[in-house]
Length: 79
Image (cartoon, rainbow, N blue to C red; front, side, top):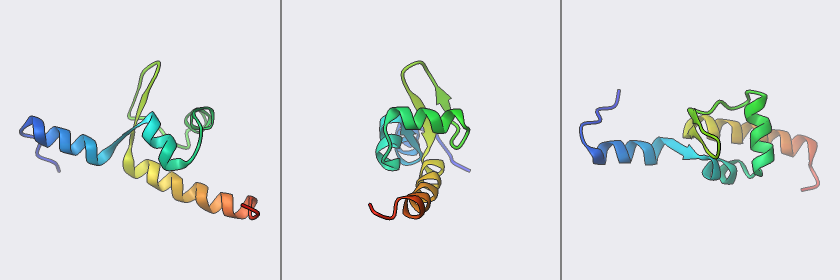
């Protein structure tokens, strides 16, 4: 468990474990429309979602990125 006793601890935790929509798009190498489809299909579930932005667990994004990389290799071998 994490001990978040100070503002610095919280900031470090968020920076190390949470990704914004833009960061998730970059990590997954997808555009916003594709990320929205992944969310809609519940391939990835946002930690928090607002009208303009979502927050994602970094570990979830990294795991999905690995799955997408395998699928890209399988279905787009020419890339």
